[in-house]
Amino acid sequence: MSKTLFDKIWDAHVVSTVENGPTQLYIDRHFCHEVTSPQAFNGLRARGLKVFRPELTTMTADHNTPTIDQDKPVKDPISRNQLDTFAKNAAEFNMPLYFPLGHQKNGVVHIIGPENGFTQPGMTIVCGDSHTSTHGAFGTIAFGIGTSEVEMVLATQCVLQTRPKTMRINYNGKLGAGVSAKDLALYTISKLTTGGATGYFVEYAGEAIRNMTMEERMTVCNLSIEMGARGGMIAPDETTFNYVKGREFAPKEAEWNKKLAYWKTLKSDEGAKFDLELNFNAANIQPMITYGTNPGMGMGIQESIPTLDQIDEAGRISFRKSLDYMGFQPGEQLLGKPIDYVFLGSCTNGRIEDFRIFANYVKGKKKADNVVVWLVPGSWGVEKQIREEGLLDIFTEAGFLLRQPGCSACLAMNDDKVPAGKYAVSTSNRNFEGRQGPGARTILAGPLVAAAAAITGKITDPRV
Image (cartoon, rainbow, N blue to C red; front, side, top):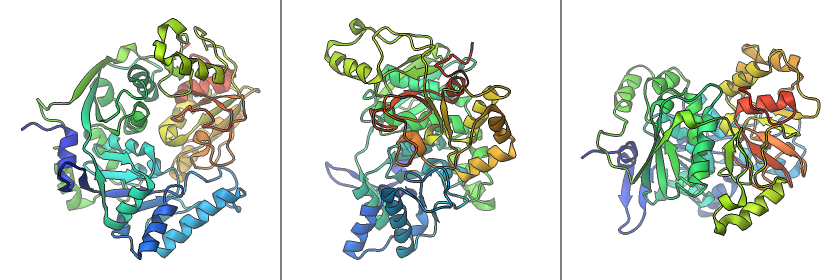
């Protein structure tokens, strides 16, 4: 019987199934950060339990970390308490893969996993973070879990899950010049809406996906949750294998050959049935920006905000509320709109390729005087590459400062907050009200659009 990629990995990890209930799924790799883990460790402590397989949990501080002066005591008392608690839990429960602030392997959880070889094809991967879907780029079943489930995984290395439906999205043809993986993802969310993939696990396929680098694929899978999907995945291929090979925690020698043989079987069989299958023409995608307060409110950079008569009657109240918050009008075009902040970073676009794109555009130019720009690498590994490749010199000459790794302005849990009423062009994943600071107005975009905004001080089509 033909199977989808999802079916193959799920079925290989089923421990047991509750009749008319959820599946007990074995978890190969658990990622853990300081925000969603304290209550989970407290639960273990209260029940007198140890972590069942501590070597299968990777711990990194990222959400509460400052992006300047990381070698000094953390000023914010809430952040400091979260980080201190994280360190105490790692020590008490003898967690061998704990990467605190300042550690060379520290960084955003969904960036340090792949770059160190923890993320491998065919795995089941969980984390108390919704953007765990990022790891699906390697051909994994990866999804976010709640704090009670974090405790469950720590205690048993398993989690209870209801089997989702399957969806495949095919992107036919090639992306145009200046169009990125982030644009493809925002385009898809604008078509499906933020609830269009609810209940599904999505497999991304087609020529445009096959042509992507691993870092681009991670960006696409990262945003799966923003259209309601349980997760997203891409079948592993030579691009995947070449990326994983040689990384510190990747299989070596005979074990590599054994794993590789298995990984090459991880693709949807000919004739495999999906619950839903969609097709998009990649040539129709242009650089994208959002205009509202959820990632589904996106449009091509040359387009205009929809008018009221283009919105379903049931959605008009929330549409008006969103535009009122953003200070925009129905039918308005945003090209040329002055902006105040630019943020390059997050688990969506904080990898080295994102910084190369940004540097390539700003080279020989100068930062706009009216814009505050936060360039935040996703890990110390990325920061090291930025320096080694000479990108820091380009940024410095153009008037930019490079900050230290962390989630930063993606969710403003540290000092990187956009002030109320200010506009931020952000390469992160969510533009909810107050997401980047109370009253902040977020316009989601890819690294190239962010670079153009940083130089011109306004929303600019980087292709022009």
